[in-house]
Image (cartoon, rainbow, N blue to C red):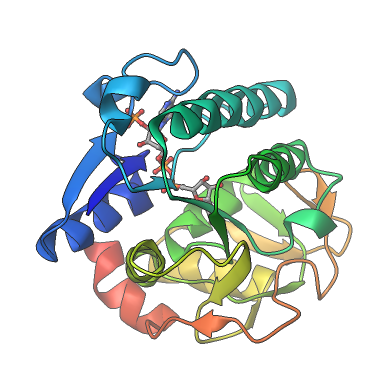
Length: 250
Ligand SMILES: NC(=O)c1ccc[n+]([C@@H]2O[C@H](COP(=O)([O-])OP(=O)(O)OC[C@H]3O[C@@H](n4cnc5c(N)ncnc54)[C@H](OP(=O)(O)O)[C@@H]3O)[C@@H](O)[C@H]2O)c1
């Protein structure tokens, strides 16, 4: 099977490319670094010739509200149009658990726009909603940092390691389209402020975390349901401790 992975050089993309190649599939890692740009359309048509499945694992280079919306709308439009022309049979995209509940945030408004384009595209699809990647804990800490203090909501989180996410994406690529959304999450639930505090401590980072229910998460106020699944997500198996011992030290 020929599979094109948009954002195939990124965190989840590169791990998904590796897994599907190991299983003998023809996999193209498509990104600006390999000559494929979904914002400009460069290299898209050539990459999609004879392609069965597209997995979109790209992310906006900027998290500024307008830049994110432009990225997901323009990229989504160009990519889905090129897929229709190439006769792609399954479009898969990675989005975030709670996207529809986080609409105070410009980033999540961009992700919802991406999801709406997919649903309206006429191409059979599967949207995968993931919880926060464990690899993103440092970015979350950074987003709440002022001076030496990190202010974060005590809302529930259930983070997942990127290796578990890539396993799930590779599995979805080989399954029929669900024409719906499936959810994945890590095996353990934490309070966001407590987990980031633990992460900083084991990383030897002196910053202190303060719980603040009003602290915004990329612009959105959180409650205990915002970032965790309502249903029964498929669970990864890598715990925070195991992840930190291995992946975080690579
Ligand atoms: N972070 C989280 O906790 C989380 C949770 C759930 C879902 N997600 C979603 O997961 C997805 C993947 O995230 P990630 O952290 O793996 O991303 P990442 O490591 O930041 O990689 C982003 C990828 O997008 C590519 N890209 C950027 N601009 C592009 C363009 N114009 N055309 C084609 N490709 C382009 C980059 O290519 P170059 O290397 O060539 O620049 C890179 O391969 C995102 O859509 C994100 O919303 C994230």
